[in-house]
Length: 256
Picture (cartoon, one colour):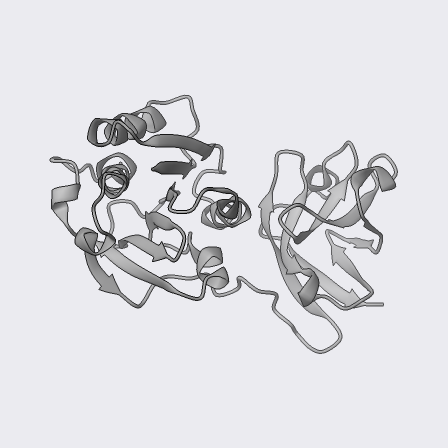
């Protein structure tokens, strides 16, 4: 089976290699794919967006292991989500919020079967000692229900959708800043009026482009990116750099 990894571990240290080694030690036939290991450290929401943006491109029955886990070693749960087409293994900290939002039928299991864990579980590296071995056992044929107890309550982001203040204007948020400085919002076309502008970082942006080359060099524009979400972009430049903002900055949407 395919096992796809998404973490904030980077590639400088041994962490990703250790996870892969554990997986292959249990199921040497597993096909391991790296989604990304360059998620901003502890940025759970960004990881959730990245996962949402790519998981449908994978073969059915792919096992996704997503580890951005500032609560590692605490009482936060470790979970396995089984949908009709995929499996997701992650800390229960909101990382799977976008998956839950887009999936109608699923089962969630808290990972409690220690037979599928490493013999010695580190308090700081559940990616290696819990998530990776559970994924490998699942790949090797274990049934999801054997991994733990089914639960119904999970952690989800409260503000995953746009927060409408009133009928005329509403606040939205940035869920991801990519390496080009594009600001990806939590807005999709269905959330927006036919004509609108956004206010962010002291700027008003009203131009929507179909593709980047429609804009002038370094011009701030809006575009619906490959994820289907509205992005604030600047051609051959960084919108994040120009606006000097971070992911916590809100934007205001106003109809024209």
